[in-house]
Picture 1 (cartoon, rainbow, N blue to C red):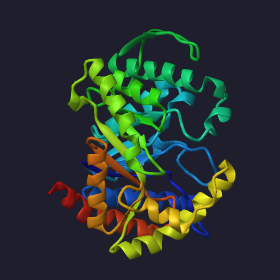
Picture 2: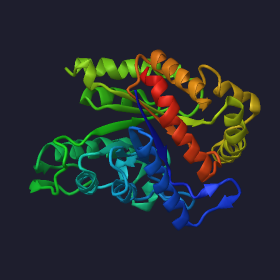
Picture 3: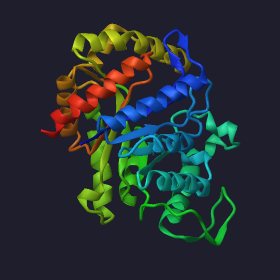
Length: 338
């Protein structure tokens, strides 16, 4: 199982607000640390809100590419519905050249909708935009000269798209939430699947992942082509007690705030304890406990090829995040490799 970190480039840590310059510098330090301790991948999300600095993930990843040697660098996710696939490909092909073949893309429709009014798109076209733009992105990835037409972008007639990526086939993962159609689409296209699970019990996604694999098999793709990744909140500390003490206050504050905005009830400690239990979504605790939980999640889902921790959403300090990344690389990953 590949192990990595996803970040939304948050500048908010509990009651403290960092300057944007300091927050970006710390983020790049964390990516460097992830590379040094042997993690496999680091992803940067895409948001267009004041508290996040990830509106241009390819730029952040390119800066990280110049400071790292081995770790793969990906979006998490690129909101493809509101982007021009030509520019998306060009940005990540350029990243691929800078990183000498370490770039990847996770594309999705976006769980937050702030990009739609910002770039002038209609939410009524939410899925149609994504389907059309995904088709164009894959066409560009696979063909140097592109002829294509659609509803939401001017047609291309035998147009070359440059630069070309360093990798023969730039990896494109499909980021999904809980919509069956999205899982089936990923399978029918033979794209690796990145599932964002942020609440409840992880095993409830097994029917949807089975749907993905069945769609892929029907489309003629081999089992090894149908990779499954999992993105969930998590944190590793020296002990289970320390992990909970560090993580719970910021987690409860953030998710209670989001609940007020989206109509959810406030977070309670009882709910939190269930989420940190054997089947709960939060991958939280000491290294051995976290590794064992990842193995349980993988077994319950029929095999997970990649797991990425989302850690910068609970008011954790830069030093806490650095220590957690080090423990994941030095303790969790070796345990999994056994």
